[in-house]
Length: 294
Ligand code: PLP
Image (tube, rainbow, N blue to C red; front, side, top):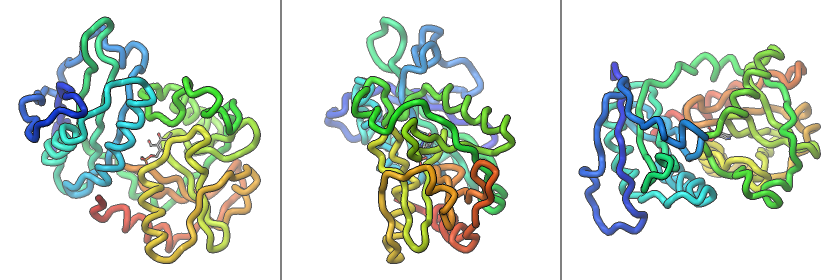
């Protein structure tokens, strides 16, 4: 694919009883303007999205991504996506991806101000080359997220379990990490627990036990973390969800940030303190994550 692919989607009702959605898709020139200036995704970041990794033409973990899109839509009071329609949009986007790694984005926005329907579209584009990062690893700093672990329960309007388009805070955290000489950040709750990274989930290995923050503390439930846990369970490893104190970071025997496109990036240092890297397991995880997964 030399050019980006973009498909506008006329969203069907979640329960629409049809099997072919071809007439709800409009292929558009990804380099040309396609959205109205009244688009609320642009004005307010009011919408939800997914980023799906594509490897050699295979879109990874489509169902978990669509389930999370539906969960995000529900939290944001957006109409629930029609799963069959979005699956077909993903198939069309994946058909434009060649050998190598690509990323498909799904966007469901509140739509145009005072408009009748949400706006929806899908894009596909070559992914950045993360092969070196997967081997070399990343240095991270911890950053205060500014709220306690129970905030999702007490303030659901903060939409913390939703993958919303409002990523300005996440991007600001990455810039702060770069200013501090690191590659990435790990958010900590005010009360001192580990949450997630601005664009990835965290998995720690403590001895032969794996642990990741439980996805009820105001974090996204990562599809990659779920997939890695399935893999670890398959090889007989003990992989759990937990409430992880920040002090566990420095005593980890290995740690990774995992996400759909970068895959498993081993953490080499937290707040300037070196962390052991499990090179063999990192390579094994990335081999698995690069294999076709459904
Ligand atoms: N947490 C946040 C805040 C994210 O933005 C992402 C991905 O973008 C993840 C976790 C990891 O999710 P996934 O593995 O589904 O890509």
